[in-house]
Image 1: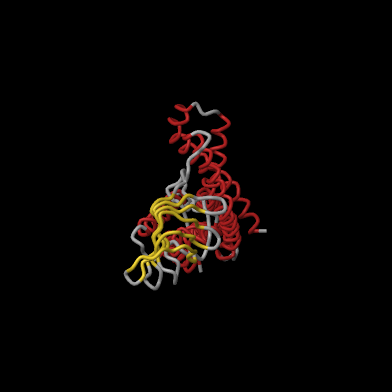
Image 2: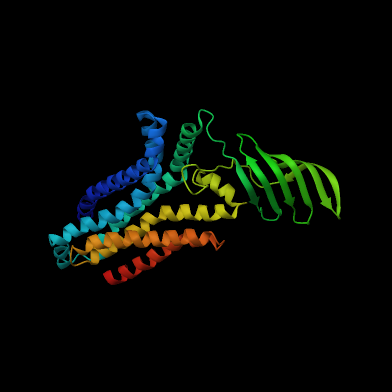
Length: 336
């Protein structure tokens, strides 16, 4: 009963928090596109579709951040009315109150994991397609990838000056491949399909070039994508596609771990917010706690993105969760 009452106090602020974060991020999107929308005379229907397709991206941020707001605001109300003090005085241990709050945080993380894995990438693909039509006409934008380098384990280095994505096969231009035995393959163009990279060009072996026509093994086939509406070129890849790309692209490994870390972020943010809220004695500190927790997580999140540019260990994507996990463990120790 006590856990149900506690969740009831938190759910309404959570819904309000989600709405506020979604509204703020949507207004930011519209303000950034307002000049373009007015110049092109974009109609209400297209604007509504842009907002709708962008909504899963907005929710991926709003779901975990609103949890911090809801937990601290809900617990602050219980502190103001002395209900927490009464519960503690009645022999209810703080850790007993923590369990339903962690359950809510886990549900938020699972919902966000599905959103990040499937819903957000597909919605961003639709967003980019619509934005491309509005920018470039009915043909849309061609997502040509340039200067792509892949390093499949045990197969050498694959390089293409341009990759033109297709539904069943990708067209390659300006191909260079160095296999594990040091043979160098070159071709003006080729095809990347389920079998591998099919080339017609030359192979340099023993210092002499020889004609080559065949298929070089490549461990996976996927349709490379480049996002118009996001700085991260992997944002439009589903989790399954990202797993395939991570096999041959170092940058995709960080993007994969970052996405899993973002999904777990709600759980760790909920742990720290609940631990902090249950240990507060004055409700006024709750507002400061909301600001500090969100700002602190953002600092760690951006720090890992900056470190990723220098090819550091991609596991550093979990740094924000490790830091907040340590802080949460400290707060749990204090609650004992």
